[in-house]
Length: 293
Image (cartoon, rainbow, N blue to C red; front, top):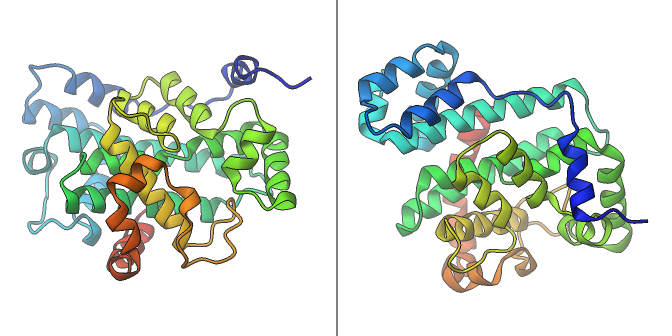
């Protein structure tokens, strides 16, 4: 008998070897929820983790971040970028490292780790770009949510590889996109699995909500703007880059099935003109790939 959604998600709650996020993530979240936190105190807190400081400064000074001035300290980063951006950068770097390390421990032969991260980084960069160009949504929230939007797929492939392979095979045999196959095979799809882990790690609400809704955006929901931006970026990346999970046999042609109806309505001009502007974004994606991978 097919499991119910509750029964299916309960299996993830019983995982014993789920890694913990670095202490710095919890610390930064707590500090940014404290109205008494200052640039100096935030900087001192982050600087206790020199590995994160090094990667953060590398990231904010990289070409795809696009800052005119070179940032040399965490204090400068906090002043120029703001607290929320710092939190999302720390969250991006820390969670990426944890998930990437998880995949190194035990691989699923049907899960292409490199292609997965290339897709995720592409969506992250494009989400940030669209937010900056349109003035819609928060660019740093869009970046971290774009980077982690598909973490439910990764968790499913790692912890329950048989279920993941069943979805992949069903998609291949029936010419379906990954999400369509998930809906046929599993009681809960990857946005719900990703949401489960984000809540379990007690990560910020914007990350949980956007991961949950990136394929089905609800009007009036929290972080609606960021959700439709991530959905738009996901659809464009899926259309232009061959994706091993989506049976995209004709990359370079816009596939409207990838887009939520609200994203089509709000960002239709961007979707329809992608062939003209997307080549400008690809070098930014390449820069980000070089940084993360």
